[in-house]
Amino acid sequence: MTLLEKFNQDQFANLVADAQVCSQCSEMAGCNRVLTDANGNPSARIMFVGEAPGRLGAERTAIPFHGDAAGENFDRLLRLAGFSRRDIFVTNAVLCNPTDEHGNNRPPSVKNLKNCAELLERQIQTINPEIIVTLGAKALQALNYISEHNLQISTSVRTMNNWFGRTLVPLYHPGARAMIHRNFPTQTADYYFLSEQFKRYNQAKKIRGQSAPKDRSGWEVVEYLLSKLGSASLFRLHKILYLLDYRSQIEDDHPITDFFYIRQKDGPYCVELGTKWYRDFDYADLKFVQGKPFVNWQNLGLFDQPISIEQETKRKIDQWLEPLEKLSDAQLKTRAYLTRPMKAALRAEKQGLRGLNRALL
Image 1 (tube, helix red, strand yellow):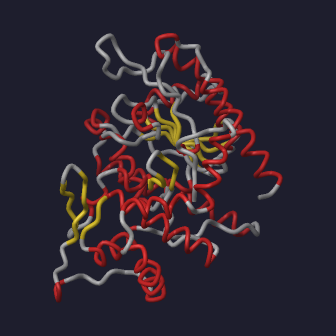
Image 2: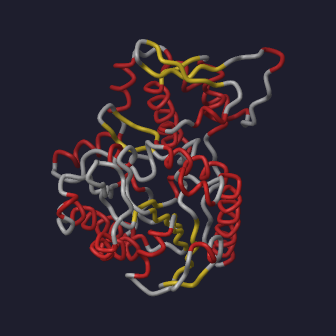
């Protein structure tokens, strides 16, 4: 780790600590302050800013855009456009969940946005992204309390704008209500546009002598893994994928997927596998066995479509997977806890630093 990276991490840790003790909005006392390692890469070059954590999503999972319908749509849009949570940072204009008198989600008020503006500005300054993407009108409005832009989402959606020394791209919120005004296919085109612009930034970095992020994926690995296992509980799938990526990181100096792992109560948790990703696979479905979710893979023999994965990657997965398949759930969890990143997360927790939702790989 360079001195700059260490400084950035320390700054982010201080920011997280300050957010956890914020009490400016009295009506949100007791809510999660959704700002931890689970928000993503603290050195990301692209930052997504939503409106506020949802009652069924980030308020429950403590992961922005995760666990509810908006989170499922967001993860699918990221996946279609080739983005990984490992390489981005996701936050909200307001870090707590605003609710009405009935306990339902409500849009953040102007007071909420202004109260959280300082924390949002500190996130932007700390992460220092080149591109900021606002998701929804409230998120776009929130940036006005940091530096005026006079943009409206209806007229500025999918445009590149200079703002606060960065490029600002307003997009619609991925929630169901916003889909009425801008449907999923149109939002998919928005994310393709964003992906192309991001690739141009990567190319510019290459020209200046800096290397762009590796173009890795993980879904073909999931596909191949399921074709080998036939059926696997989500618990096992999270642990096995983490251990495969960890082994690849140790032996090849990079993981085999671009997935983003955080520490949760039962061990490593792959954020990408926390949504209904299996719906995008023709031969996968989810079933519950004794209350536990299992993903099943339908092998079609001669009619199977070839999985686009390199032979060398297949060989390594086969080699590393064999001993893991023999382990019970408890043994698999123990094996994951014995890895270096998990040990570091536990040590940090004992020292009083951020506990759950620490980033691993």
